[in-house]
Amino acid sequence: MSLPDDYMTYPYRSYGMDQDRYAWRPVDERPKIAWPCGRPLAAMIVVPIEHHTLEPSGKPFKSPGAMQTPYPDLRHYTTRDYGNRVGVYRILKALKAAGVRATFPVNAGQLDRLKPLVEVILAEGHEIAAYGLAADHIHWSGLEPGVEAAWIDEVRQRFDAAGLRPRAWLSPARQQSFSTLDLIAAKGFDICLDWEIDEVPAALRTDSGPVTALPLSNELDDRSLMIDRRQTEAEWANQVLEAARYLGADVDRFGARMLGFTLTPYVSGQPFRMAALRRMLAGLTAGVVWVATASQIADAAALS
Image (cartoon, rainbow, N blue to C red; front, side):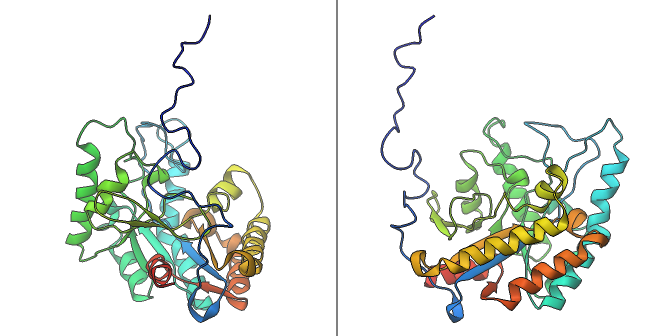
């Protein structure tokens, strides 16, 4: 059976990108940026505060970290709950000891339930970001018309009701529809952590003005490396530090860079991983790395 004549026809086939959210810019052609104090690397630590329901819908897919065994999967459910009640406080203690601030994306549906945790996060100088409604509210282009806009509107309303006005947005499962960027920009979010498109911040075009994309490394995701790929905590810490070393050493060729990575409370907050986490944070702060929040990095990039 032969293919139809228009099978290879693609209207965006040309040099560069096949979308218009951001410009085509090879690494050796983009403008060089610089961080405060002349440091060659900015590190953005992201600590996701998420709620996984005991019976996920699985539409269009299960969010990473969702329940795995037949209902009721109490083993995985209680582990995730442990992260938000116990593990995250170990991470907070380690961040405080290292003298660094992180970005905490929070599911809007958990703001009331986790109010004491949110208060501690803010009291210690960290940044709160929006993390959709819940892990099971996944954004994709197969949603019924109006559903995604209603979700994002509810996220903003819930944060407003809590007295919070986050600038940064992280989508559940880091999944977007074709409309997500326009919808979040319309609600005042001007920073997005979904796309790993570069090693520096990038301006994304939306109907409501630019949104700054801050790359968050999926390859250094703690849950992916230590749970899915079954690497040791020592290997994970070494990989983060090696990425920081390599990117920091490249400043003369390509300018300053940034490195974003996650500390998932039920993964990195386990007691047997604390030594590796403390070693990693010590390695970052002892070198030429500027550890900063999402807003700090986005603002510095705009001024560079």
